[in-house]
Each structure stands twice: as C-alpha cells, then as structure tokens.
Image (cartoon, rainbow, N blue to C red; front, top):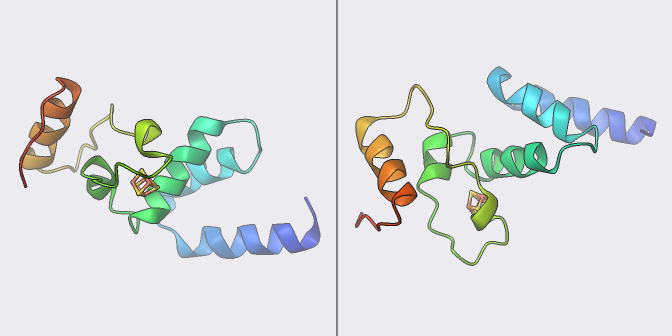
Length: 94
Ligand code: SF4
C-alpha cells in the first residue's frame, strides 16, 4: 500500500470504535469481501450495528450482503426480535 493509502487507513482507523477495527483491517488486506461489506455497513450506520440490522435501504447494492445473521450481544430485545423475524422471512413494521 502506498504511503498515502497507509495515511488514510490510519486516519480512518483512528475515527472508528475499537471493536470495528479488526474487521476493517481484514477488509483492507484485500482478501475478504465479507469483511469489506461488514466494515462498509458499520461505517454507513455510524458504527451503530443495530442500525445495520434494521437497514431499510432495499436499493443499496450491499443490502443482500449486510451482516444480519449475527446479533450483537448488546442488541436490544426489539432488535433481536427484528433479526429473528427477518431470518424467518417476515417483515416487522416499525
Ligand atoms: S446495506 Fe444498509 S447499512 Fe449496508 S451500506 Fe447499504 S444502506 Fe448502509
């Protein structure tokens, strides 16, 4: 990676919560598309993972790939119920 790339990556890392850094670093190796998608969704939602689970932007090209199979241990009960209903193919009104 170029010096400019390293600088931008370091700046981005410094701006994100620590728990999201390993996924971002894995994404930036260029060896994990899954990590890249998860890192992008996390960034898109301001690192509020429950917002990724509740994403309603069906037109986003990452929507079918957003992380939704794992529920954060800090997710609220309503988020857990939403994720479970999504897995079951149901829609939950908000
Ligand atoms: S799928 Fe949703 S959370 Fe992920 S990047 Fe698209 S709009 Fe953001």
